[in-house]
Amino acid sequence: MDARQKETLTRHIQETIAGLKADIDAYKGLTQPIAPDDAIGRLTRMEAINSKSINEAALGRARNKLSRLEQTLRKVDDPDFGWCRECEEPIPFARLMAMPESDLCVACTEKNIG
Image (cartoon, rainbow, N blue to C red; front, side, top):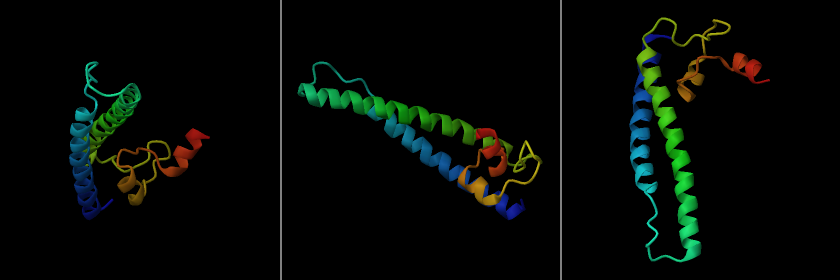
């Protein structure tokens, strides 16, 4: 990976992190407890509880992704960054842009899954 690609990837990761932080703040607001004395009907209350559960799951996924991207951002300047940990071949730049936290190329990922 050349310096220009590394700079592009770093900027992409930073922008994604900023977006995730905004998403996390929004999800926190959507996962507040549903007060039992809220003047809403039974069905609407059940929908609110279901929606809260969905938002809690999304919050967890966003936090996990944020953690992985922050770790990745710290590793971008490491000499091993961008190289597959299995086959030791370079991970294509397009894959790193799509999934910056990837430490496996597509071929090795498919081998591990299948």
